Image (cartoon, rainbow, N blue to C red; front, side, top):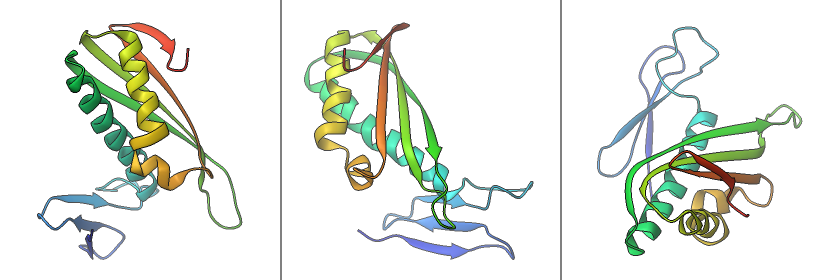
Amino acid sequence: MKVTLNRINGEYLFECANKNGQKILLDNTTHIDAKGVSPMESLLMAVAGCSGIDIISILKKQRQELTVFSAEVEGERVEEDDAKPFKKIKVTYFLEGNIDFGKAARAAQLSFDKYCSVSKTLQPKVEFEYEVIVNGMRAKADE
């Protein structure tokens, strides 16, 4: 796997591309005119995307009728020398459709325990918490 990064202005704006040419913009979001996401925000997005792919794939195999899938990700950071790495990341998934809650919760658990390469890369240094909300019903995924 290989990606490229090119600076595209006189400041901190970078265009990143994969081998197929798909692109994202990264920027220093402490500047008021930032035009991209911060690298740390992109990491949170990667956790949501990776685990989202897992959950959707698992639910499709179980013939669950998923009509809406979205997620919110919150990262808690800690000062460590001159850096501020994540110490905890919480993901809340919002699913709608004809979906068995237990299957949705199990899919999220499997993603974090077994399949999500992004979260696996960050563990054990980063603690993960997740919650699944199906058709407006909220419950912890591990209940």
